[in-house]
Length: 425
Image 1 (cartoon, helix red, strand yellow):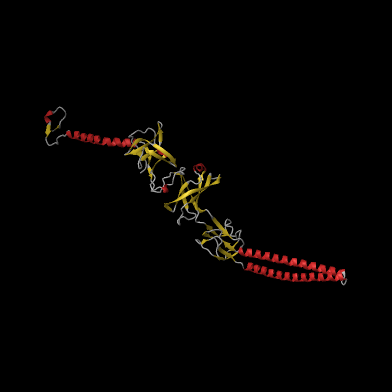
Image 2 (cartoon, rainbow, N blue to C red; image 1 turned 60 degrees about the vertical axis):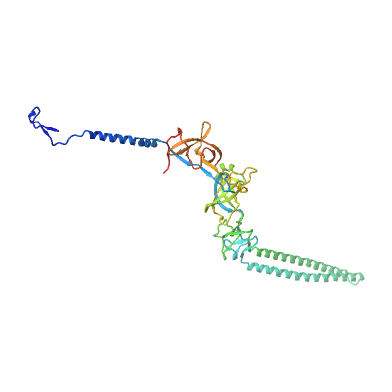
């Protein structure tokens, strides 16, 4: 009810009641306040949890992994990983011994050759002529020798006749002396003819060797992996203009694909982890799902001081047709087998699985090795028993299970059931 007044204060005669005015509702305000309070009460836990989550430390996490081998497989832990290229242990850039123009090639890329096979020939018509001339020179020298021998024999008989006549006083001393001189000259001519024959034969051998040098032969059994020349090209043992100096007259590269290895480089700081003969696994970049067995064959005796690296060679023990020279490969060096330990392949049972965790998840507290396990947005402290370290991981004997999530580089001040935020999407 509203009272209206049309007069000044104190004139009560003009007061009246407006019965058409809307009635007041004071309870509505209390209802709105009650709704707001209820909403605040219901939202408070969520808001508090949200604020607590925003104030929680942000952490990086990693999962616990497990290495399981099939029967005959291996769970050997890695020691070091390096990358390199596949090379043939025996490889040769086959070149020519004498210069000339290539007249014939008997190979293409992929051709298999055997040691001693002629794979190319240099045009040798001029050398053929030298060989023929040397043979004719031998025939001529042998003819001259026959003539010299006949003359010598006649002169020897003449000397004998003159000596017989000199005993009877029929001939003079001068005639006998002349006959002896003629016999000595004939003997010298025989020796000269014999030397001429030997000289002609030596020239023939030289011509034959030169002719043989026009043949390019395979130095060992292998496969031609690169063809460097074509028929008609001029080649030289020292290379020709336009040919790379490192090729040095090479016409082909032959490799023994039966002995392939990985050429890789290891930092000086990591060489101490390697020992000759230690096992390794080789993976080709082209075939990531295929693993080849390897063995460290050689650690080079000299380092590269400019790069601070040492070159090593790893033999591939079971290469197949997929493995080709110059392919990119990665090598995982594994811990060597203990003395007397049988290889896994000798047993029909699979070796026990190995549980691995990143080393950055483990910290020491009160003399114990612990990790922080993340589950449902909160953490829990776990004491673990560790095994050997390999690369950036460590073997965990007990305390965690495969698949659990651990905090990397745990921040200080963590407690059981503390809320954390995990980095990442």
